[in-house]
Image 1 (cartoon, rainbow, N blue to C red):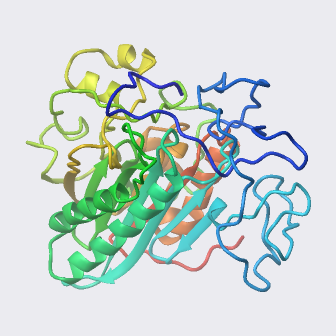
Image 2: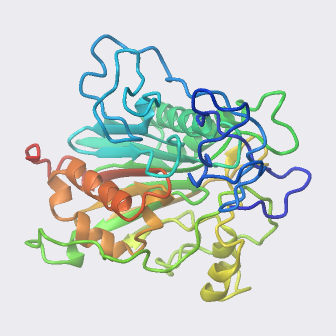
Length: 424
């Protein structure tokens, strides 16, 4: 993923401190590109496959924290897929440090999420937050956040974890303080933007600061409220899209429903007009609205990407926009170099049972159609959201796992369909 229009106030490529050289290698040696995992040519400063900068010798990988006694007894190394993590937190087979962020699972029974490093990245630059709170109108509500670190920025893993943590805490605090879902969503996005911006240090100059994308959901017994910045997505999955008794739906054997190049998450400033509301809801007056309809499965968000903006503004057709090398460059993100951050917010009032899916592009690059996702994840996902989240993550891994993968599934209405633990 090359830099598009890098200049003053724009982002350049950063380095990945999670990539190290094997023992005895020369200083500056790189085992694989930290962005795409491809072995670079000796002496080259940039990855020929994706354009990632390789000039600075990264330090050897280290575990994020000291291991606790017995912690690695059943841990599996995400690099060589063996259960050989030593007591010191290092894989005895391949020598890579065990990182607890490589595969993270959150199972709250009425909502669940998985965040996985994937097969090509050297670290997980995604993060999530999921929590259940009491609803003032009776029954529980669920708040969820997914952030995807911008790989070309420095410390993208810090950006995503900081953004998800700050937004999750702000959502809970605002809702418990009596704020409505839309007000809480705006407050959470602002809190996340501020927290990520504060990560910028003295060395993060010239528009190259830690950055991430953002999507959140507040799921109450009556409504679903979504907020987003960037190209992490939210989907509404309706149980009415397919027969309720169908338990054996599968995802397509091929790739994405719309063929697309590898995503370019390079944050660039592109001056484009304001976009109309998501095309799935043409009757909405603006992107900040409440939609009441017997909702079929649909993509609820609209990517803050170059291609999406060009299509929304009528400058290019969808085919023309996504054929352009700038198609997946994001035009809005969280970070000190993001300028004014204005999250887009929308509220849905579904008339039928279903589920809210939040995900990073590690999933939607392989399957984009909401109806396909719904057929695969429902109806069993209403009672077993962890099973559905794991199945979607496994599909992305089996399809190539080219990026970090984060999937959060929240059945609607919350707790209405809780079932027994799935049998593995």
